[in-house]
Length: 169
Image 1 (cartoon, rainbow, N blue to C red):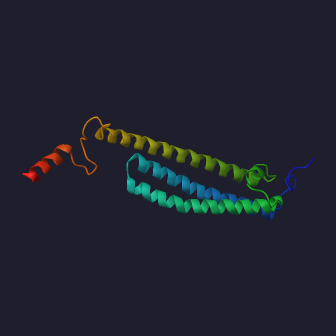
Image 2 (cartoon, helix red, strand yellow; image 1 turned 90 degrees about the vertical axis):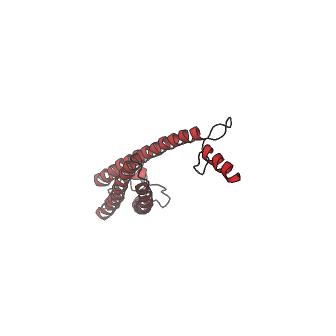
C-alpha cells in the first residue's frame, strides 16, 4: 500500500527549502500577532481603550499577512504533494519526510496554539468586563418597579424633576 502521492519520496532540496521558508514566514507573522495579543491583553486589563482600538486595527493588518503566508504554504504543499485537490497542507506537512519541514511546522502549530489561547483569554477578559458593566447598569435601571434613579442622558431623576418644576414656575 502506498500513501498519498510523493509522501514516501524524499522532497527535493529546493522544495524542502521553499516549504521551510514559507512556514517560517508564517511563524514569524504569528509571533508578531502573539506580541500584539499580549499588548491587547495588557491594554484591556488596564482599561486603555485607545490602545485596545489600535491593537484591533493592527491585528487586521497582521491577519492579512498570516493568511497570505498560509495560502502560500498551501500552494507549495499542493505542488509538492502533486495533489491539486489538497484542501489543507496541515496533515501532509505533519507527516512530511523532511525533518526540517516537520520541525518548522511543529513550531508553527505551537505558535498558533499560543495565539489561540491568548485570543480566548482576551475574549474572556472582555466578557468579564462587559458583565461588570452590565451589572452596574442594572443598578441604575430598576426592573420597572420604581422610577429610574438616572436617565440615559446621565441626569439624576431628582435633578430632572427639579429643573422641570422650576421651569414651570
